[in-house]
Image (cartoon, rainbow, N blue to C red; front, side, top):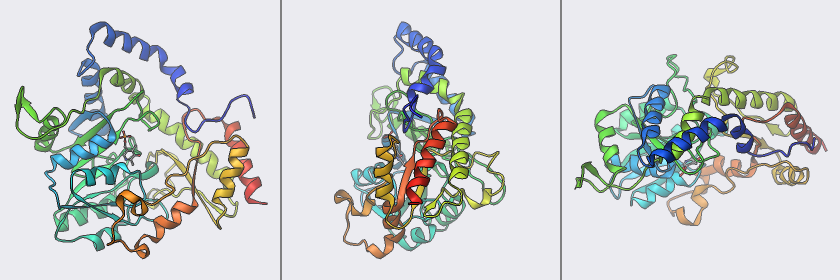
Length: 386
Ligand SMILES: *Cc1c(COP(=O)(O)O)cnc(C)c1O
């Protein structure tokens, strides 16, 4: 198993198949010097609206900006409290703090890594204005319960969809909206390693609310709704045309890419079935039995939980065998120096604390071969059965 080095994410392999299309698109942009807001950006915006079944897509410069712009567009003000998950990438909490809002971190669920709705409810105060669920690793948080809570307490919901574009939420009613289109506004990232990634930075917001869409379009462009009339404080956050070329090529293949990730996840699941000391990813229970044909989980990451303090040992073993892995995330946000708060109580973060010690993510991308998965899983078996 040495002909191909195993990659955590194989963007070079993926490029092979789309390179003619991308080079032709780049040539067109370069030939027309349409670097900003060119036709490729407009095409991407409308294709993504169609794909997601959402009224408005507002492209921007990256996923962190998308989250920040969402909070600005909703009119959140310093002192407002925003509840989000303790177990996620720092972007989410970073922009809350940057805007002078008060981040309130809460625990997540062991099974699917997403925000614990009971913990959210417990954290609500009269100052709470918004909830940011994160669709971590490729599947949706419990959006039905979150939307019900938001309605009851009059809160806004911003979906952090950086890891779950292309996933569907299986609502208990049977509806299957796309991830990111359920809350008041969705935010995503096109960082190269995301499921829909460009070749640099990129991001977007989604909403079905016409007024909010209008506000957001102004904010991404210096608060201008009419040229040189600055009605609100805005930012400069644009998706450039070269990135849109890449995204157009990949968006038309996103479901195929998703199916490849799911096939890899199934192969991992079956190769690790019955092995003690390891928990394979749980897909949302509403989907049980039909996961083979639906995209309820798009496996941005394929994340195992390792029992009995053996995670670091396994990581070392994989490293020795030339198998890349990721620890997402090794330190809960409430323990990060920048985000500590004396109001937090360790007892309230039992799940996140335990997950940080147990998780390990395996190579996951569109180019994994059955031989690579065999090799990876046999090394995991041999270590854990020692
Ligand atoms: C990647 C990511 C972001 C940030 O996206 P950037 O484009 O890198 O700014 C935000 N939230 C989550 C959960 C992410 O994984």
